[in-house]
Length: 404
Image: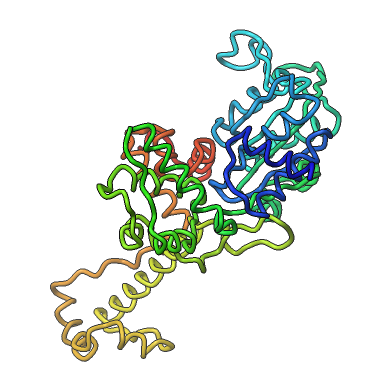
């Protein structure tokens, strides 16, 4: 009974809505681990509300009267992240006009929340591991070892096991951070909470803009609860606000609701945070790249086959049926005449190099940069990347200012 009262108190304190057992369970874990100094790793899909749990842990710990600092590791450029986290000395690099305390020094005695910890570069991961092991760190440009007493809570929506397998994340750091794992459930596993959350978001809009709140019909409520909600609470809030602002009728039917729900394939690969084994694709974006790459390969194959026909060469001997399916019958039957004509009139392009996934990523990034007149932050937003990840990919793909 006491833990139930504590869970209720936390929900009221932080404005957490829902009564699902899976939600209550992770809140209970956060409350149990709060009085300790153990490191906590919070995992879960984007939009599930991971940011509440570091605050719950901090404010129910002995450190609650000391500083709480939240750091978005994905938003800090790779070249400055060590300075931001651990500080730097005057003159340690261009622009370092004075000594600067890092977040670990500022948060001494308190709690530091490292969001998107999977985005940390490997060199920074080594420094973070040292802090977790011994409480020691060194400012950039200094040789003096300093100590800090900081509780670290980290969060990620990346599959860290897959990042470990690909060499992008240190396994020893993962075990240090993952002393106590908290996996926040996706919204589709909290179906009974979905109508409550929708009603809350709709009521907020109604109060803000002084209008009657929208109400769902019974059928619409069923549609709402059965939807997949890939974007989780963030997506649900967006839908509730759109409907509240755009619909003139305050009673929302299932037909009206469906207009605001994008079709979602539930069979697409999703993140797995709990353990061994990696997924074939790390995200929907990776799956999209794979599909586009396969389509491009098919187009290149068609180009080669057409080129062979125009030049009077036999098509690939292992694919006669595919050629007949893809090429117009008239072209296949009359290719001899076409060749005679081609010798004098038609110039057949040289076979093009097959485009790789890196080529497509490069084009996509360049287009986003051009659309935003070279502004990295805006381009990263359009690409659904963190700014630091965009910088890293630009470096890996050889994109410079001259290319924009």
